[in-house]
Length: 205
Image (cartoon, rainbow, N blue to C red):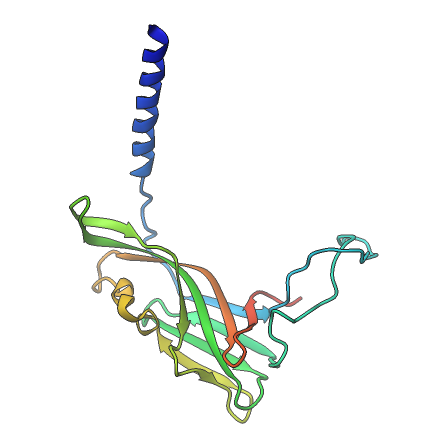
């Protein structure tokens, strides 16, 4: 008769521990700068086959560089993506693009905001994390366009890129602690004409 009782108690304790863990919340940082990333050329992923690579300090298996699922149509010598903390603008600087090239910045975001009201259950002044979302900047039909010198210099409002959800990134009033935590899970530069990734954050050495 005791064994079922022990199992029940353990089950109840597990549920209580799970509820406690679900309510744990880390504090937001108090300061941050702009998000800024130089972009490296995007390549297709490698699934190693029979190819053997010979050399010290490198893996023995690899793939020849390929740009089938990634873009091979556009040239570029440099590109940099900035998301401004102060203005909320997504900014792209680039050089070495073909005249007339059309690109967009695609951001994968996870946004957490304070001070929200909820129902089911009902609550007020709650901190809510929203489902990850992917946004394109600027929004169609607008694009970042390379000029006759192959230079791209453009900006778009992150709130506009979020469309109906633009209120998520409204900043705190001046002098107040931050109310929104924006995680940039990924940032890619995409060729608008073929939908393929041109570049991702990275470095050249």
